[in-house]
Length: 380
Image (cartoon, rainbow, N blue to C red; front, side, top):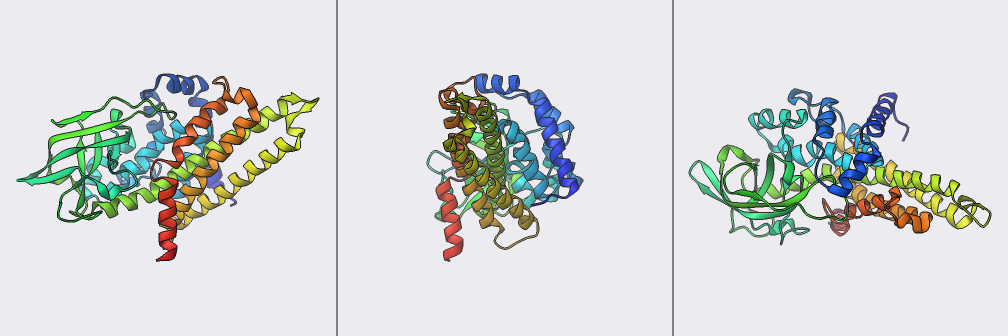
């Protein structure tokens, strides 16, 4: 796709910020120590990145989906962690609020997300409800002017640093499967809410993940988000945008791997010449570049189709997530292979990129779930 000048300008701005601010030293520190860099969070808020795709009337920048995709891609090209910092408030964090929130809820929460004043996370997954999101066991029981929530969420990205969570809970136990589930905006400072110890992860170590435990948490009825008993459909709509964001994250990471591989292959000499002059290496690089180009076209076009309201846009989002995440893992593996033994060492950037890539086929719907969504749309 040939980008219009306004998008090329955005692309340059995103790239310049990432290259300048998210330094190698900071990336390595976060990978080594974990945690969350609040200075970077507030700096991104200052430049409007946390509200890139949020409506202007709620304090956002009013950008379209292609702008959002370009931002996530360029940030992930420097480091996937940086992409998640910006992705969450623009995607899973705000998605359900934008689609199903009342005007009062939107005015209350979204400006705080765009400004960086508050953070929100998306709490769907449970120990027994991962790919089978309809297996949610967290309960919400009506009690006067509130609902009482009990349950446990796991693998919740950003939970340790969030102020709120969009929590999915079963409000009608008589309805089986995906029916009878509702959404709630839960203040994580409420009595009865506790967080697990941040998980020790293979990669993406600069964005903490933990359990959220709910023990008789009283949530006002005003914090019910969307229609009662119909939260599962809301989750699926929210995940459409999230999957496109993960695809853009995969695209940026793959591009970084390609750049590292090309640079190294020109410098490393074996058998009297740079290894890029050996056909085995040059063909791997050709494969990497071709797969990245194919993913980029699919993702950019899907972003346009999503905003145009194309009927098959949800399926295309799954295609993007499925193809780009698998592609990024193939490209990262080739980048390590081209580096040889050095690619296995932490001194080289591809070692971290390889670890970071592995989550892409898992979160926001595994590759197998995407295959189910795609085939389900085609075969119904």
